[in-house]
Length: 219
Image (cartoon, rainbow, N blue to C red; front, side, top):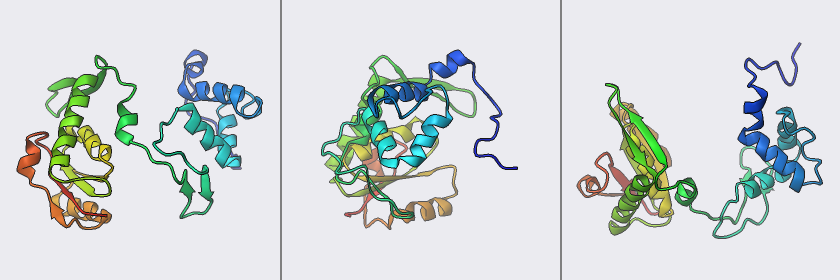
């Protein structure tokens, strides 16, 4: 007999569960959102789940508020069209994804710990990651890339992949084809965003991030 909530295969210790982000969100929501009626027991995982599927706008509006999303322009409503496919979430809102990804990262924090197939590795601090993102963004900007352009990269699974935050920082639409894919498969993957019409010289981008081969097209 099927049940809506089958038994979990793993249950964390109460102390670990109580310190989790989802429980912190549930406590915050119970205290601030609907007079404490959103989540009766913040440590009960099924409670926020029920809320998320029975009150879509209330739940996801609370998620937006809890994470303090800094939008350049505010959203008009949480869910404009409740259809699948075609649901429209937070219409009117604009924000910088790169800013949100890096805003709580202190300069001395360890942002990336990288290991390759040989076991060799290195670390990237928050300060270094911000500098690399800014460098690539500046290079793309100098090459004429701006809001609405499409940028694609054919990259290995290395920290350079995360430096791809530089493209969204400029308001572009970014896509990545991992170098783990064969060339033909990568081309098919990257064409899903419409074929580019203007190539950016790989040699120029190599000054900022050697792994990058990027292209753009006006939207």
